[in-house]
Length: 604
Image (cartoon, rainbow, N blue to C red; front, side, top):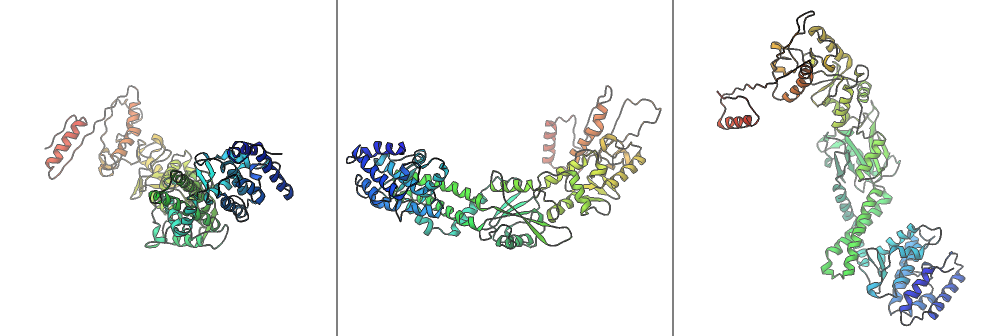
């Protein structure tokens, strides 16, 4: 059977030619086509535009005699023949089973050769209609069309329109420039530029594209850094020794000024050697089309050529981006067993959508090799397993973050914020005494200042995580000394359950120098008169004043205001001394204090 699309092309396009007879011409051509297909034993289900054997001289001469002179070389080089480009593409791209490129070229030629120059193009739908046999996937021919449009000399592309012309297009110029004007080094620079321009880093703190050596990768502790290894440092799946592993090992061991410290804050990604060639070829093609577009005036491009250059720039740009995803498929993560010096490399591949860093992060997050959310119980397990507790049964938050940053035998936390959230989760755990830990703002003498349990905290590098047994010992001692019930005030250890500091001289928690935030009134004796008035005076530290006021509001003033008919008045008194306040300070303070509603102020 003959597909109606073939008759449509003959009756609607070829019959417009002066020398092509509508009936006799169609009969002569189809008799020749059917004869050739019969002799070749063609097993296609339909005779379609894509199956017309234009490589047969009897068929090609029957068509070319109706066309203007000059179409024979176009047929031999760009459409069909023993040395034609479509046949080479079919052999190189393993499309020979379908003859996909030849069928596409035949379809475009039959539909566009007889048309006038200004109205020749056909779209992809019409091409697919002319080539796809029952049971075949149209995607196979789409791939062939893209490759053909990239390399053919006489095939024009304008957006979604394709056609053959007697005049050579700028594709050959682009191919020649890609092969001669641009090298692999130029392609690598273009790839590096694209990687460095990525802003969607996901949980990664930074991205280092194609470092020349260990000195190009900083040794900061601001979070996990992603290192994209240079193309020369390629990798092979499950291989024990590759250029990628060698380069990654060198960066992991060294920094610009000696041995690397934060080894657990690096993740590496390398390309595969097989896909590297395709990526570089796509990058060179994009550079070639970009150079043609930049020189459009010097090359005197026609409007059609200019549109094709713009279309090919966009197409090759997308191709390069896609092949970056396909090429950089090897993620290398350093790991270590506690007590050993050997580094082992976990190998995986990116997954999901988004940018390359986001895809890598999603895969590592699913494998718990890049942790973006951590729990307090997990931190406690790490503290016990290594172990990391100090002799006094605590560990500073800063030292804990350094441990997570430096030792590959610990989990790889994405940033300090992940650890701070885990500490807050652990301290707020109601079963902290058995499962997690306490938190303290600092340590002085033989006690922890601002010891907090069973509530969320804002963990800072200057703080401490405290083992439950040590925290319980201090809480019990303070309860005995100051008569406060265990766990008063939602977990605080002071007599009012505030910031946790015991009262110092004069009723101020911790004294004036310590800047505590609890009330100084002694507990009411059993059987005493009902108390109806409270007065407290607190000395605030200039640096920690905001934190102390928050503690006062939550642990003292809220309790007073919640009493029956409770009314609270808060007054802030500032006493400042100096060897002499200059005029500028006097003016600024008076104006600002007035704007902030000062009831009274005076300089003496």
